[in-house]
Length: 100
Image 1 (tube, helix red, strand yellow):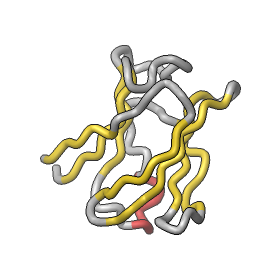
Image 2: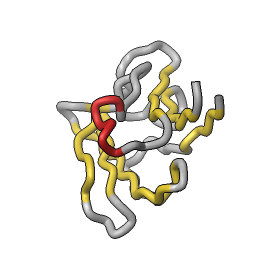
Image 3: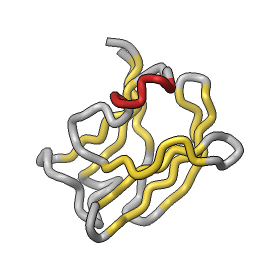
Image 4: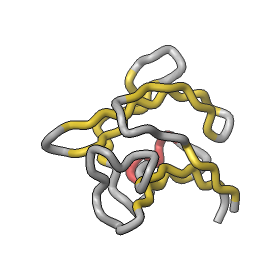
């Protein structure tokens, strides 16, 4: 299994990243009611998936199998709780997993 950490900071952010050969723009935004949520945009900046909550320990893309993402996107926290506003990049991490 190949594990790649996607670097995050504790601020709203948008960045480009290549995952399993596909270029994505990721936008991670703090929403007071929902916590941290992820939007995935294609290389042109068009939204593909929006509003994915960063729930620890689950494959965030599991319900989007039609994308054929080529891996799993998993949020991990030190305490398995939803990350708070200051946790991303510190006690909450995002990983791209390829393989079993």
